[in-house]
Length: 187
Length: 187
DNA sequence: GTCTATAGATCGATAGAC
DNA sequence: GTCTATCGATCTATAGAC
Image 1 (cartoon, rainbow over the protein chains, first blue to last red):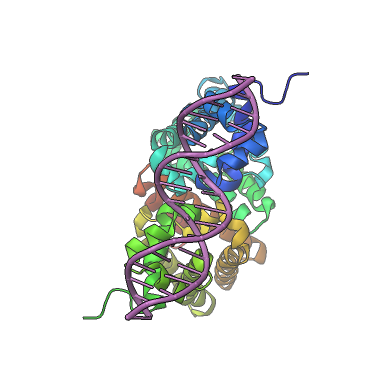
Image 2 (image 1 turned 90 degrees about the horizontal axis):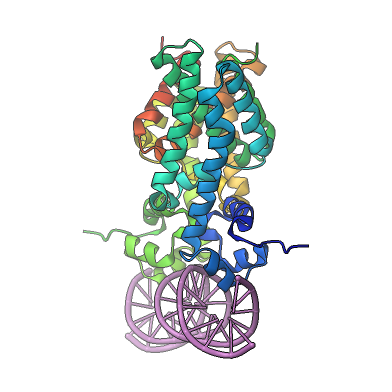
């Protein structure tokens, strides 16, 4: 049986969870070493750029996941309405029905934003463009599609903030349901 | 001319801005000392509990401001619709049209949440209760008021995240406009 | 590649002079 | 009340043995 973390990619999920729990500044190498089971030297072997490279790798992994599972289908699915419905299901599952925060959104609010500005902006711009594209193909005007998109993304992010703040994941689930309704996917 | 920071309360705005910019973990005492012009000893004289007491004082100050300017009017204004309209104007001004983040929301996403859970939850619960109350007095059912309230708070928080993420404060302004429309205050 | 040990800087917090 | 000096702990990152 291979050991828990055999290569760089195996460490990413653990790193992601750590950054989610403690933020960038709050995640120390001691904590990382403990959680991954990797010594400092191994960590610096996999991530020569240190903690900053670890966080960048996590953001890249998140972006790749959303691109594969959400952005891509939104842009290319012949049935845009179904792609949007699946987006919302995937989002609800990804954020564990409100018990898990959005790392990109959390980074956007801290000074981590300055460090990872390009990746944070890229994530939201991609999501925005993909969803607006699907809405246009569904029949909305460019203007309406942009408006609905912005409202949906803000609601999702805000729903996560709210759920976490009042310690009630159901607030996020209700928020997703409202978005589903607002995008016309609950009929 | 008195010096910049003569008493405890004078330090709060500077502290608030620091925590907003760098988060709880990212705000070091060196930074605080530099920005407030207070030596370490003075800081510990005003805040014996150290950094944690500073952040708690900032959160209390924020809560007091919202209670005074927003929650109170929402609960007691004889014209609930006007109170809601004024809430949105005050919110837009407070968050500097999207250039300033919500410290409470940012804390909710980090591990600062565990430290300040009660204050964070209190802030959102008060806002929620006050806005729902105004909406009920405006004629909505309890259920509808709760739903509209949750949607509004999530949109505001998400609008701040989005504006910061894509570096476009106008996204927040559009979000507030949508909330204003959703709450029926733009007629 | 992975370990232990530790460098060098910075952390939050405190002591004591004034 | 505010200063300087400094504590012990912890931080990120590196060195060197294996």
